[in-house]
Image (cartoon, rainbow, N blue to C red; front, side, top):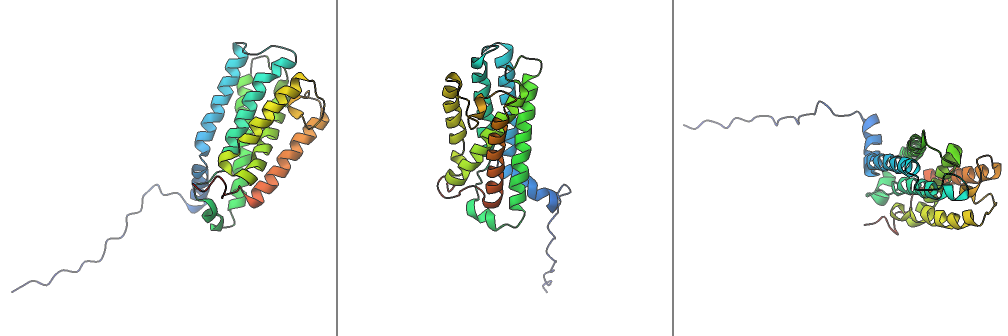
Length: 221
């Protein structure tokens, strides 16, 4: 006499108690795939380096040479933001839904604001010759260049144009160029420099939000 096998219904998959709602999970996954948490840490490090440079006088206290080291740090922060345009999913993510452009925009704007905040905190209490207004103007301008570069090269190479333009501006600083498009070397009250940097960022945000970074040249890895 044999007993009939007992048929048991399959166990329901256990749901984790800490599962995030979809409205939170999607932005969080977007931030993680762009390495935004690591970007915030890198931006904090840029602020610490700026503080050290000003506190221990790695640069001149006044004159045009005083802008050299802060400009390098500002361009480095912008390059870090630009690299976050890279996504390991490439073109497949573009079919994920209509929220992707909004996530691109919000992520970039938030990281740019965080970069300005950390750099201003790093300069707090120290003698920043050009002032925090030039700091903010340089960050938004360099970030715009990085986003525009990502449209052509992809996120992994988006750092090249901000750093390359920074090196060019080091020469423009020594030569006392006054063109508005050379905004990193202009004084805080230069309206043309503000307009040039703002136009670059606005055009970059619009193009980057709608189109996104290139995913073939450098991002397919």
